[in-house]
Image 1 (tube, helix red, strand yellow):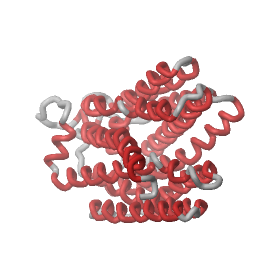
Image 2 (cartoon, helix red, strand yellow):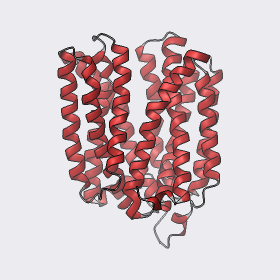
Image 3 (cartoon, one colour):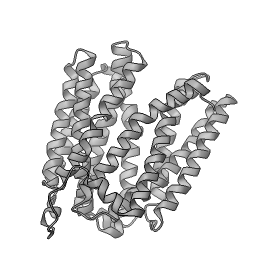
Image 4 (cartoon, helix red, strand yellow):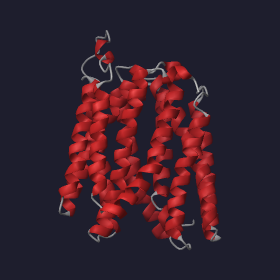
Length: 370
């Protein structure tokens, strides 16, 4: 691994902050599902609405948050967002009804909409372009590592101390992330740009993507892939439910997906991304083959073979995400990063909200294996 990136103290601090925030998010995710399904004995619709409450606020807020990230001090915006996230997560400790939980989750999602474009802009500021692919690979490994460890630890905490203790630890994790960012230098490079550009507008990020034909095409294609991923991933539990030891298979398969992403991220971190659309296209083929293989194995009731093909699909997804994020950073100027990242986040939020709903309709009409 190239040591020069790790000698970049600002990148290391930003990575630690990401690790803590991502860890808090995954602690929260499983604990919310357990609280709704087992603590309050609510059904699958209530669980799904919990996910929607967490994601939906970003649909309208992301473009505005991108404007704010390109006009304000990004470091201060990240600190404020993490502190407010900590308070929102800690508030779940005392909620007594489902609607109160949804309000708390919506506030977490709305605050994250401001954190993400600010963090993306900070990354553009602290990492040189030659190291951007490596930086994206490291961030992918952090994200997938916390995805593997966070839910497992959350489950152990719930079993030992009850469904609410992960919210306290998650809130503290966000607060510590804010403290780390406080010691991070920078956050104002985009404010020093010598430009006569007018003030940012709500849909600027989408206009920027439309003006860059190759980048706009890449974002559109990636959004389509993400939509299909969400459509299938959200219904994977239905695929494995008829199999023996379904809950164990599901847990191992989720971990295998994250492991596949981590392995590919480690392998390609020094790879030069010269044709990102080709990488994204090839990865979509791999993910499609993984989906087909999972369906065939489940139909043959070979449940314990599923983690292998899903690990392949996870690796394929990483082969799309890392070149995509790298190209997005490299082809966006520092004073536009917030708005462009916010536009991409809006597209991602649509995929996360609509994909599972459409996947459910397909399965209800045609069955899960087809």
